[in-house]
Length: 169
Image (cartoon, rainbow, N blue to C red; front, top):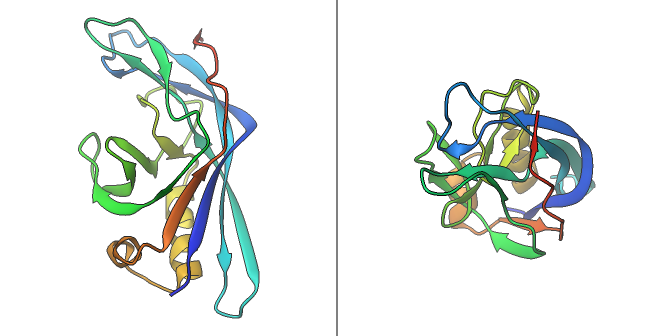
């Protein structure tokens, strides 16, 4: 078993279109947020250093019945050890950073504008969530996400980033 690091960088690599969450008034208001580079780094079973790159939504738009839309997400530099947990806002499991912050599957098409986002890191692109998790399994040498979390093998490092402005598309 080998440790693996996910780095959520402050480097923007494109844009995404999202809706607010948890309130998503119809017709949907679409917001533009940056896509950020996320890397997964570790050592292969042949002892060579490996880094894979991904694109992710880092900041989302929170809107409630009593609060207007605002940009949310983790902006400060910080490091967390991740657990594999059920995520209540969508089907399936994800990497829990802490409390309601996760790293999880994002939209297959980052410009689709149909997915709400509230500040989790969302791995974007068709098939990219599977590639992300397969990279983690390959580098840890462990094929079960729960076991990776239970053995504290996966760490997320957030680089400091400025929250983007609230932009309606």
